[in-house]
Image 1 (spheres, one colour):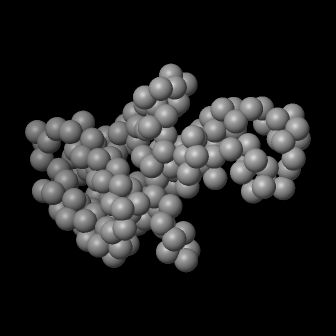
Image 2 (cartoon, one colour; image 1 turned 135 degrees about the vertical axis):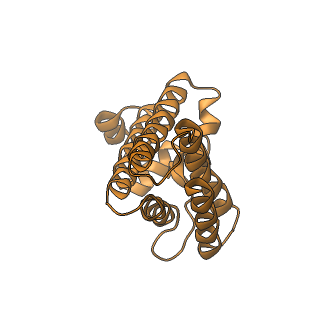
Length: 177
């Protein structure tokens, strides 16, 4: 629910209807709407970071690893029937982060983890000679993350999946030099 309509656009009645649980049962099991949102956001980050970590660690060249990441990202952003979901964080949580310190902390921690994962993979690539010795790994990690965020915004805005994959391929060429 939150992924599609955000925190403000989702009511406890919406959550109740989607889960089949009545409001008192929801509250007893999961807490209030804010508690449910925080759990959903945290679970999303755990899932996304695990999927992307697996893609980064899958072996092969840096370019292959990055394309696995971006393909996995597109699989998250588009459902199997090509319905656009985009990114829960970019699509909804960044709005809440501006007014909710707890959400802001979760979002910041997730972005930091994402950047750190990319930076660790870039260190391996530099050691393997795939990146220049003087490559700014932090900047490359931020660029790799920014590419994912751009894909999320464009997906939500109607850019077709195949066009987003082309965008990712161009970004990989820039990152890998």
